[in-house]
Amino acid sequence: MKVLIVGAGPAGSTAAYYLATAGIDVTVLEKTAFPREKVCGDGLTPRAVREIQKLGLPHAAEQGWRRNKGLRLIAGGRTIELPWPEVADFPTYGLIRTRLGFDESLARHAQAAGAVVLEHHSVTTALQDEDGRVIGARAAILDESGRKTGQTRDFHADVVLAADGNSTRTAVSLGMQKRDDRPLGVAVRTYFTSPRHDDDWMEGWLELPGKSGKPLPGYGWVFGVGDGTSNVGLGILNSSKEFGKLDYKQVLREWTAGMPPEWGFTPANQVGEIRGAALPMGFNRTPHYSPGLLLLGDAGGMVSPFNGEGISYAMESARFAAEFIIDASSRSVSAGWTTHDADAHLARYADYVRDQWGSHFTLGRLFASLIGKPAVMKLALRTGMPIPVLMRFVVRMLANLTDPSAKGFEDRVIRVLELLVPPTSNTSSARSFQAAGSDTAVSATTS
Image 1 (tube, rainbow, N blue to C red):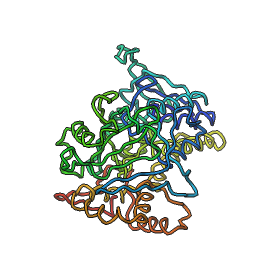
Image 2 (image 1 turned 45 degrees about the vertical axis):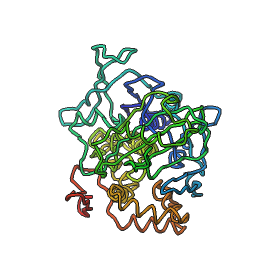
Image 3 (image 1 turned 120 degrees about the vertical axis):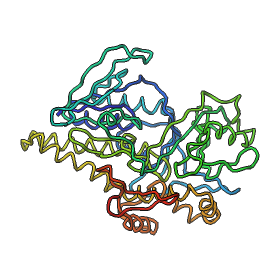
Image 4 (image 1 turned 135 degrees about the vertical axis):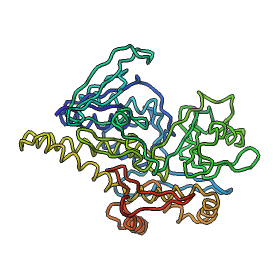
């Protein structure tokens, strides 16, 4: 079996590693060249660290990886530090690593396993046979400066994995548009030279005070990178009335202007420009499987509506996809499976992804709709911040760090909550949320 992967980010490189290790012929097309930047908070929760461990990817401090203890949450004049929980299936530490280094490390790891990674190949469209099955992709060849050379090249494969992020030209070329019934976020971030660069907590601001003291919309973060800089950024959801109406870069400037001067988050210490990106949440592009094509990570809207985390889900979806492909490949040889048999097996990938995160994402969609209402958010913070045991539960819920055996109290509560809601659909474009004014409702029939 021959596999073509579009995009060499966390999803694409993870899938490439597993497939190459299994002896499958795999080619990855990456439009840029490494090292390259990506807009991200650079924070990896224990859920993402677990995937790094499964890959066997080295992540020592001397290689640019910085461990952290947990979350420091700030809101309403209170600060609370919550260590990562001890959960059987996850490590007890998170990591900070810039995407500049992280993505290249993953891509080189896949190459070392035998994957072919072709940089400066920008996919423009998926290729289909006369029956509509995806059989490859067409790529524009770029020069060293990233400009089109006028040359194109067609790549053919038995299976194509779209891991080309939120804009996913692969999926869009097949008519798979974003769904407007799912949450969407926007994040902006920059780096500052700061004495806080060696902070060993991932700091989250649940309220953003401006220089004048007036609250600003959204949530923020301060992550110490360990190289002399801190990653400082903010996000806002489309459930907020301010969404799409603000200059988010200016909001970041106003927020950092109100911070203590000794932290160094000033224009003079800024490293690089403020950059922004969309956060495609809650399966906002579907279906995740169509004949010959699987969507991974951001291409399938696999960002958590709870906390904006996407890297762990990108890497997990890649591992799931690789497992289905490896199984189909082995059965094609041992059991004489046809392409139709293999496609029927690969179609189970979408069901498996939905079973893993569908209910969690449904709860996240409800959460996203609630925190967009300032009065609700203020009440929740006033109630929760003074109660550490409640906040520890919230962290486990938001970061999706639960024990599959569900033995602990928190695990049982989360399990019950997930059983009470229908899993978010990822197999069609049928709406599962209906907007009526500012209210959002769950449809048990199509979600």
